[in-house]
Length: 462
Ligand SMILES: Cc1ncc(COP(=O)(O)O)c(C=O)c1O
Ligand SMILES: N[C@@H](CCOP(=O)(O)O)C(=O)O
Image (cartoon, rainbow, N blue to C red; front, side, top):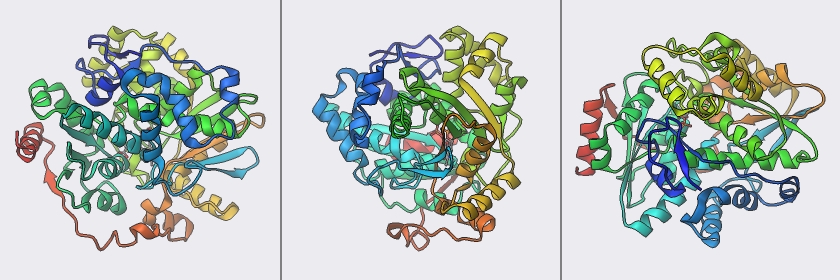
């Protein structure tokens, strides 16, 4: 299996090369040259299997020769053994025809653990084999950073630097990043918002001298392996509701478009998904774009769902690549226009996007009201991100097809917002109960590429 860039100008890579490099050298994102298909019978055979068995069957065709079957099975087993639920991604019924996929039973209480725990194992295996070192640099609005730090803390062959927007993540998210004491972990609080963090990370990848000097690697969802790992739970959940004999729909709280794009890949592989619904908070650029208004970032507005406070949505580039019939030059042109302020999507591409994605948005008041309503009507305490999904799903679902909404984080990561909306204080799991007593290590940085690169070079001895 070969991987190609969404901008068409970078060398084709193997799975392992694409995973270790993150962003393509032409600035694009890697995608498999073709999408493997599962037959109706192969999907039916996933019913009743463990999460790990399904993960192996779904991901195996994508990884090629990089790992033997036994090696890959071992990697998957180690990735998910620390999850706090035997099903890994349990499905709960909210009401008739509406289900919640709980993706917050991993070590850092957000869906990011599904991919990051796997990537941690993949990197460790690969780097041990090659004897190489890497310097991981990531941008986070709260959850990717804590998941990456948890997955890579203490690994000899890895330094991990995480840029997060100062003052714009929850206290729990910040402490998850700032309290690990291992020397290879560096939490950097940047003056700015998430889009600034992500832009600086991409700048570092496009600075080839820096990239090659420090051995840069990326674990944001620009990394294909992140998206791939997330395809698995679309299969486990759909099959448990009767797929492939029955269609299902998904609503996905969306920011960087990685999670919903994983759903699109599942559909392309043959999973009978009726609708994929993009749910946004008040930073609703994706909803506006899918409604035909063009893609025009106009500044991030802080919200009570901070992980989705994003205007420049990385993986939308992958969706555009598909909507433009994999025309890398057209995507490169749109990304140039984005740098200059924004772009319009052609009629043909917009139609292709709408064939695959529906969308909706949710205000701050609606988010709080949904948390309150669901708490009263069921035993489920939602985090603000999951609540956005539930609100949009309720508007979009139809009686004939079950709807699965992704609950992307644990309510205890956002205690203030959840308590205000529900009257319930969500406690942290026991293993984290001393999080507020642990000492923090944070480095403040300006939104300045030179300053950040110098700091990383100093800390990695380059
Ligand atoms: C809790 C939570 N929900 C939803 C999202 C949005 O996911 P994506 O960026 O894959 O669209 C994020 C972060 O990205 C998140 O941390
Ligand atoms: N919401 C994310 C933002 C980064 O997204 P990623 O999926 O591209 O890593 C976060 O919590 O950091």
